[in-house]
Image 1: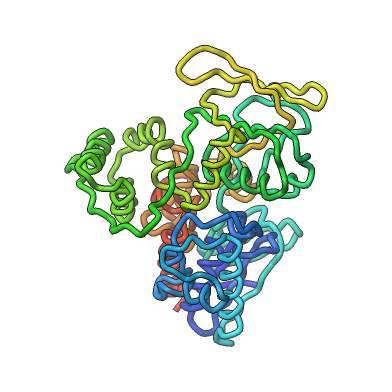
Image 2: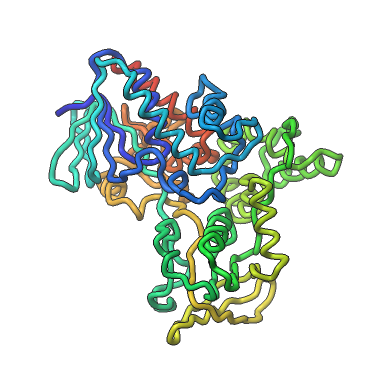
Length: 448
């Protein structure tokens, strides 16, 4: 069957695009959603059932609809949850909200728009001379589409050591497969690689499961995400220089903070300008930012709900969690223990940590291609090209996927983390919902 649009993916980007397509497509349209994840729309982030896993954005900014800003808060209130604008709701509740809103939209949608859910992996994609696309599914079936939206997200990053330097079977390579927690004994010593938001989630999950052993956290700089302000702050207009030099930009922001502004207000004021600011940088400036400023950007920009940070700090003060700054060298397993050797940051000294288990929380795969046979096959056939800095794939300002020669292809779009090379700030709900709405409107307009 030929569909007017095929959405490939199962996470938040996919559900945001599908919701907007259902609202925008003309009568007689057909939509297919292809993915093999039973928890459609919730993805990795919002399927968790731990109440301690909190959103990192206040509820007032988490509506899935661009034109209904208070929708999530209304859902919270209707379900007996705290609905204050600045509350950091649980991620599990947000997953339920997405499920409920999507189910309601399906029940209420016009009967003249067809939508089919196809539980399968898309393995290959071919573009036809007439501008349409065909997908080969892992099931052996074929799917044809006039327009396509890739919502595949990012894969988990590999461990930062070669395979020959890894330990054996006591390494958790993907912590979001939460069944690993059931194998952890209460007194085990754990080493978590990476000190970002994923690390925070896994530490809290361990304690929730009754773990009482020590937790060592190792990352290159030992930086931990900072908290949001306890109360709401008014964003401050950032003072940016006319030129687009990274050092000058950082100097201007620091000057505002030294002048008395809360740094969180400065960061929040910068948010609406971040995409345009990123696009104004040349390749060299972007590369310099990624090499030198990215870790500090992450801990200031992607902040924690205050109660989560307080709980984590209590574990640090009690000596349960120790943060180490250094460069992983080897991981050698001897019996039931693993020796982790790293070089301390700022010197040549080596240090060893002996633990029972290692958990990989180094983040998401930046390039976003290795985890997906579909994206790799599209790269091989020239349908897409990786971003030169490893930030997903190359798209234009309208989110259209560029082919191997750099030409934007009609009716082939990408949404979400895969488009970070073009938009940078495109992994949080407030950014993705805007992109999803814009892409759906363009597809709907071309289908009329």
